[in-house]
Amino acid sequence: MRDFHQLRVWGKAHALVLAVYKVSEKYPRSEIYGLTGQSRRAAASIASNIAEGCGKDTETEFARYLRIAMGSANEVQYNLLLAHNLGLLTGAVFQQLGTDVVEVKKMLAALIKKLTADSR
Image 1 (cartoon, rainbow, N blue to C red):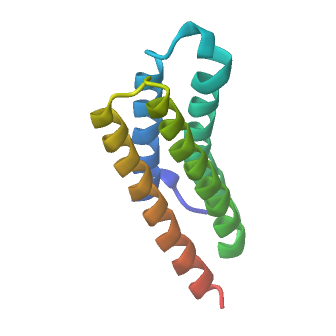
Image 2 (image 1 turned 45 degrees about the vertical axis):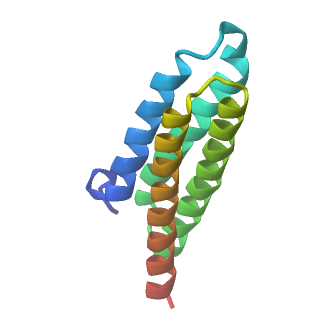
């Protein structure tokens, strides 16, 4: 069993969740059950799946949860693009959050690769 607090990727994912919550506070009230909720759930899912995977017994199981986190990261990336295209995010905020999501995705990919190589 691993301590998710010790993983840099979890720390970056948690920071991303906090940033998504902060920017989505400014979305219109009409989006509370739409883009706001979906963006927040997807962002939280990244960090949650990393944490949940840390409690699994094998590297293979852990990697499976990291792949789920990767799917959620892709969802966040799209939701940010949609929010930007709808004029809900400025270019600078969109760029920064986009960079943050890509960094998390790269870290997840590297960890998945390491875990799957170790399990062979």
